[in-house]
Length: 453
Image (cartoon, rainbow, N blue to C red; front, side, top):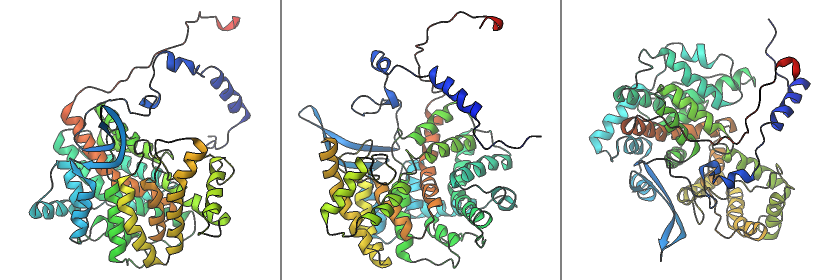
């Protein structure tokens, strides 16, 4: 049997040209038929495709009958994200489990409910016998998102009620995935790090008495040690990434795939495929790599003009990856500010001081201040551009010594909560499959016999 083909042949390149020639669309047709490309209108506002009670993203308010940009706001089940995070941080608690309960069940738990819920998650925090050896350790991938998706799909094989989409069973499956995502991600990285990079292999079991954030650090590090500040800021990062409205790509994917009536594992694997895309979940990696390149060219962090010169080079496609982007700046919805970035920044500074990374934090702060000015000057965009949550999250993960390979899986470990809430919401409220319309703009053709073509 021939081996697995890993190279693009000249024949495939030629066929690709044929595909492109016969598939390209006249751009004017989108305007002619009023097609909302990317399900967004010309002003970037999303097309209304559904209803949700799970979260709300606010970027503008109506003033004198007109929509005016405002400071960004994010609500989980009607609660302002600032109030939620201030609530558990002020009391010195970690918040992941509490906010997970809120998103899934629509209300904040009392002490007894929270304790019971933590016990439920801890009881679910285990994998089938030999799953690590037989699934995770086999054919490790360089991309942890693919490893994570494969592991999720394999869990279906171990579930005797895998296709049952009754609400209690789907909730059970979702709680299991929320509980085991950290294990699947970290163990997948350890397998890749050992078999592909030749590093030592160690598998630490999670501690049922610890939180999700604490267990991630425990399982990842050889010595299993971490500080309270490290656990606090990782927990905060997970809460801030947990949910962001129904219109983001992976959550919309969750609704679309759930509406078909398929199983939970297939739905979550589809959402993971969406999140893997660099336009969605990989932005914080780009931010970190951009700053690594920036530090090779910017040597005086007090020199605003030197920093601005590099930022202009980015926009002119003369620096870093030559894509013309300043990564971590701007958002599809927010304009004046991203509340998640605002909440994050205070703790980022504390962690930078604890890790001796004050100079790096100073550069990040400078770029956060100067980039919107440079973008306004160079692109003539005046709606407002601000740092988004990805601007600081990659920096945080680097200070926590998380490998780049786990940056997007950390996003997934958080967002599986939002996906689970939206899957339940879709199943509870509708039995209609999501099926948007596409207009055909190809003229009819007359069939020609093979010998006459």
